[in-house]
Length: 258
Image (cartoon, rainbow, N blue to C red; front, side):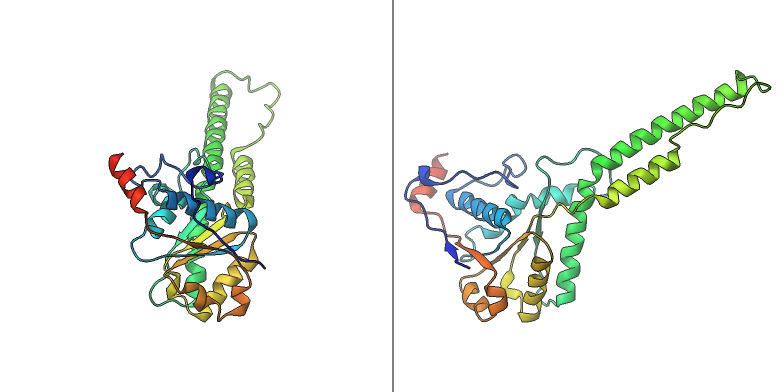
């Protein structure tokens, strides 16, 4: 597979527009959308769209982690009640941001990413929970009104009143099926501090990537690509490589003026 290294455009108008998947100025007002942040967002969009593994490397302090958190809207994920009901985010929260521990085992990697994917799935279920709650409340009110009719208005010697459907149990079962059948919304997994991953943990990441039609991005220090080149099975799946560079002096001056 041919690897594509993104080059810094000479002019701003040479940048292709991002499709906006996962980026949001409204959710991260503290971040300044620099040229490097926009390039990183476009790199993430490409990995998501084509289902590739991507590598992002850069020196410490250039903004890799901050850009990744902003792109994934991970602070919004952490603030949301995964067990509640209500409208979901628009666009849908569909990006996992995961940081492995200093000591990591394949099982811990798999469990950690699974918990985060389950969180996104629970957040995507919020509208169904709200709809179920509204329907159940409507049915309970219907049954309450019917009970009052039977007690005070219905002629007990007349024909028996027919059963009402659906019952609250039938509605609850219907929505339980819908909720459990809802597909996993995760389309991209961003792994920060990827330098910590050893061979066994990388194989676990490869297994997660192979199991589903998702993109995966590894973020680390310069030299990460050379390290991964020692693992041919993993390295063959890399489709994009992105260097996260520090701000140019011209852009720093422009941000100061703003």
